[in-house]
Image 1: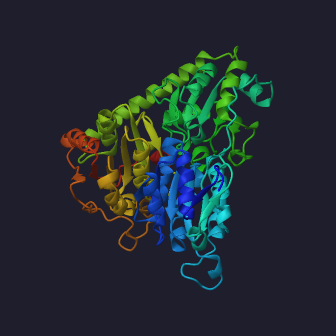
Image 2: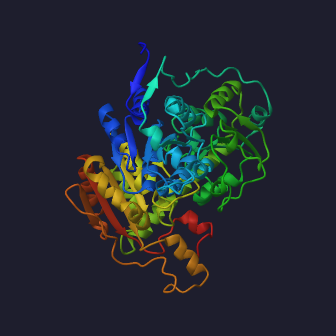
Image 3: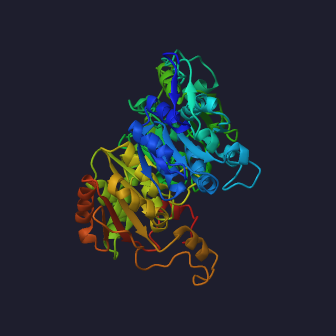
Length: 559
């Protein structure tokens, strides 16, 4: 064997060696019977966050990838383990999360024989990932793994699926010659931007809006987007998944566009003369849901061709949105900002702040804890380094509404909005950001979907504060039931009453919040418990009519 050659006892050892060489330090998952993977992880010093549910394993890995910007790894068994994880694969794809899924597979000699847990797993996963591949021979283990890593990190980033059949898994792997490495990124400073349709539209605008999508996550650490907005005098909005990519305390920031926008922000949006969409998808909740788009030019920039919509008039730019804003800023030194538009942005922000103050005054007169009060207390007690992980239920959506919640990092589900994503993803987020306060702001349905994994993770992977809005089920469906006049007893989407049970223990602290006067003290106590590595759960019974104003104003729920 040459000096550059290396022999591995099995496929998992070879794969784990490649993971370590490329900076991976954590895996999530629920492996099948082939626990040799755990032995390989132990030997390499990699940690596995064990899960009880394959969907939650995928959500955790996705949360880790979104928060860190690095590759996440999820290990699965075969057959139903893969189909059970499919929802998580869909979410990772829609969120653009770099996740490598390692799955077991039946051996080649058993295919077509009705073998135990036999399934054409590549066919199942291919529509949900950037690349799906079954390794057919031990010699292909290392090249296939390097290809999978390359495709996962992109650009564009997204999940990939790599299947290791049992006969390949147990075979010796011999690597001869230098081990293949990931492509070296060519980092270029953006050059001069030539005048074209996109730049011409931006230069001509006097009432511009900059809309920041989730693709700008980890691409705006130096505030390039905020400087671009300042240069244009533009109102600054984000999509739901883009939240956290810009400074929400910036004087041009006006919140989340579309369904979640406050009334003053909607009025501002409807009078703009240009939208510049940066690294985001113009999906339904952004372009509809109560905020009518004016008939204006939309300049779209995305490194992923699939993220460029042909539904809107205006130039579409295939490329790095960060490079675009830097180049455009330099090319538009003489851009003429208008004081009238700047004044309207400032007035909209003041109006939104007044509306929050009025809502808090109103909430103080009502019994029980209102969600606006809860969000205000969470923001007031949080440290500077913090992340809010969210779901997308009727009442959880309060946290999408600026300025009821302001600042910090944000992890939300994609427009697919799978139940339980935020509850499980928070564990991955905390693993990626151990020095941050991580709060999961979720409904009781989501909590129940992830409860087993929350309990399992608590002893070794705790530190998350769960704030659980308890309406007894699925508030959005119940609102639609009421709109149609259907019988609540026959269709019990919610059953208000006692909060759902939790698994208690020395690593989990659970409290029910009903009293406004103890709200701040209970949250502070929960944060202290989390700072020592524990998992805190605050159950908050909520009233059925406690609906976010933008959702209520959009008339998508009964009044």
